[in-house]
Image 1 (cartoon, helix red, strand yellow):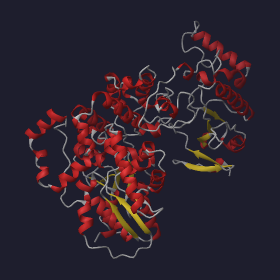
Image 2 (tube, one colour):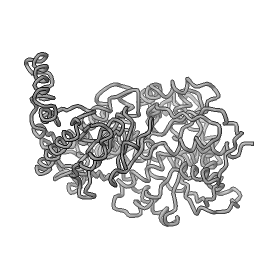
Image 3 (cartoon, rainbow, N blue to C red):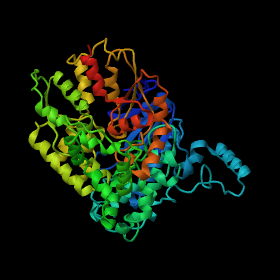
Image 4 (cartoon, rainbow, N blue to C red):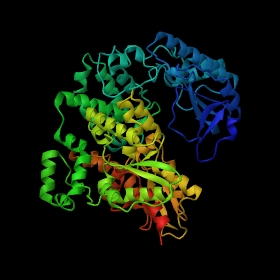
Amino acid sequence: MPAEGSCKAGGSVAVLVDGQRLEAHPAPAGLRRGHRRRSRPSHRVHPQVQGSPRPAPADDGLPRRHGHCSVGCLHIRPYLDLTDPADVVKMRSVAVEIKDLVAEYGGVNSSEHGDGLARSEFNREIFGDSLYEAMRQVKKLFDPNNVLNPGKIVDAPSMTDNLRDAALLPVEPLRTRLSFEVIGAGAGQGADDGGGGAMRAAADRCMNIGLCRKSGSGAMCPSYMATLKEEDSTRGRAAALVKALSEPDPRAALGDERLHEVLDLCLMCKACKSECPLGVDMASLKSEALSHHHDIHGVPLRSRIFGSIRFLNRMGSATAPLSNLPGRIPLVRRLMDRTVGIAPARPLPVFVRQNLSRWFRRRTPATHVVTQGTVTYLADSFTTFTEPDIGRAAIQLLERAGWDVRLESGVCCGRSSLSKGLVDDAKDKARHLVDTLSRSTEAGSPVVGCEPSCLMTLRDEHLSMLPDDPAVKDIAGRVRQVEELLVEAVDDGRLRPREDSWLAGRTLVYHGHCHQKAEVGTAATVALLNRIPGVTVVELDAGCCGMAGSFGFESEHYDVSMTVGEDRLFPAIEAEPPDTVVVATGVSCRQQIFHGTARDAWHPVQLLWEAVTSD
């Protein structure tokens, strides 16, 4: 289909051109992947896509391609291993073919990120001798000694003269706990060395573009937005990890305290996984690095406490309301600060005795007609014990929508252990959960939940912890957001929100969870909120909330946590009138919003339940 007819103002859409998927975005897009960028009039997108070169990995034989349809910009991303001399030759041949194709269609070789060392050598052929010589004269006029960014735009070396990967030292053997699959990782860069090469390649994906140093939009990188220090950006951390993993003893280098300082303020929000043009996954890299730091220095008490959060929350619920008293006693909070480093200014979660598991076990069995099959609801380690109303709303909505709901409440996904670098413990929990789900659920039946950080762990980190387990892949493929099922139910008429609920006429201001945004996006949640009659939905571009699970509870991180929230999220909510309804999918987000603005935030399923059952 003609690509130029597929773009919609203000949105993005995926189209098929000659059977190939092409993601089209409006012109202001800034976060896009791609090594080769070329531009031409948008009405000529289709024939140029037909002519695109197709060097690619052996897995599917195709390069990754996407572009900005409205301005005729197409990105070509061949996966090549630049430590392999044959692939270096292939890269240049691809560049020459692209240059010729661009010239044929009257375009330019670079439209977004400049010519640089990668494309400048082709500028004479692209622009012609006359214009090229004029550019050389301008350069000489303002920079006669050629000291300002030499070799760019004019008088450039070959694109293969300054490849950094070839200069990296061979990777010493290092056994990693997570699997870092990097397409194009060559000799000494893959799993045959125990994983250290693949880990270095995962960090070395960073091309120093510096998009992680932005502010005012997106979520990457919250710690940099708070401190404005290079070492607190994804780029700074990636460079530090590449250096450590290139040392003669990478195991010792990962235990270095200076490296630990560089990684310390990473909130593990995963924003870099989706917003970094090269997809650097710093959250996974930090988990792995922390595990090696623990091997050398031992596991701190606080990390063990937070890694066992499901057990502690269950005990807190079982002993509520007495378990809520210590959080209100200043002397106890000061003691917690001094002994384990829990910030005294941070409110502790309030445990609920009638938790989700107890409610589900004791309630009157549902008598609804099952028309949709069985769905498993994952009772996460947080809302189950502190906000059970969320799970109750979700379960009852699913039942009204014709689902037979099975509650999985006895096993932890391992999210909290991963965040503290307790990867072996997280693996055990992941294996236990997957085994339980495999044995007790119907084949192909969906697994849903209301806490994005837990649910997304099943489809992301479980695969990197247990990459060879087919059951893990099966469960990961069955994970769905509960919002997806509920949107389908509303659209099919199985759920009928009332036109006259108390929400009608209100504005819903929605803040999405970082892991949700990084893994699957917020479209399903926004769609669900828009199914509530009479509401106006506003999705905030407010970055990370700053809480990030245990991060905001830790004494030395409390100030940074609040600075991140104060950057955009708190002001955006405080600017809303009192009748605006604040919505957030993440438990950490709701905690941070309440602490920073004194405004309660609802989970989307609670609002749909209100709309369905409102009198």
